[in-house]
Image (cartoon, rainbow, N blue to C red; front, side, top):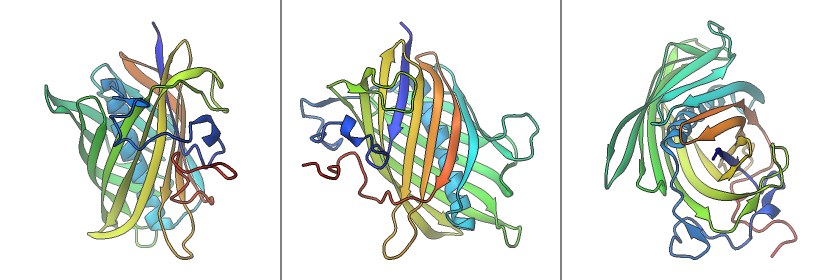
Length: 288
C-alpha cells in the first residue's frame, strides 16, 4: 500500500476548524476512546525535526526584522531512518539566498524512543539574514506521543551585520483521533476521509541569552492510502497588549510513507488576527 501523510495546522484560524469534532480532547487524555497513540514513522520524525529547526530560523528573522511578511520556498527529504535534508530558500544549488539543513538519526532505545541531530550543511541565507552554526538535538518517545528539541544557531543583525546568538526550545504532544476526518480544502484529495493525528505545543526563542518570543503551534496529521501527502503548519507568536499578531505558516505537498518523506512548498511569515487561542480545541464562532 502507498500510505501518505499530511499535517494540517491552525485549523481554526483558517476556517477549517469545523472539520474537526468540537469534543477533541487534549493529548493528555490518552485514556479516552476518542484518541490513540499516533506511532509516527521515523521518516516523519526526522522530517518534523528538520522542519522545526527551519521554523526556528524564521523566528530569528522575526526577532531581527519584525513581522515583515515574506515567503520562502521549502523542501524536505528523509529516508526510512529519518535521516535527510531540508532546503529553505531557492532550490537551485549554489543560490545565494538559501539555507540547507541536515537531519540525522543518532540512536534509539527500545523503551525510550529515538534521538535526532539537526545541523546546517554550510553557511546560509534567509533574504539577507546570514545563518550559521546550527545545532539541534531532540527526541521522540516510544509511540511518538511527545517530542522535544533544543537548538542553537547564529543569525546576523540587519543593522550591524554582526552575528547574534540564538537558542530555541520546543515541546509538543501528539494523539491520533479514532474518527476519520476529511482532508481540508486547499490540498490534494480535499474531502477524503483520513486517519488524523493532532498535536499542540509551545516553543520559545532567545537572543544573546535573553528571551524574545513564545510561539504556540497546533496541528493535525493524517495517513490515507492513495492520496497525496501535504503539510500545513501554523505557529502563532503569543503576545499581550497591543503587540502585533505574527504567525509562521508552512504548506507542503508531496509523498510520505515508511520509506521516506519528500515534500515541497513554502514557509511564510504572516501577520493575521489568529491569536494564541485559535487552536483546534477552541469552539468556532457560533459554535458550542
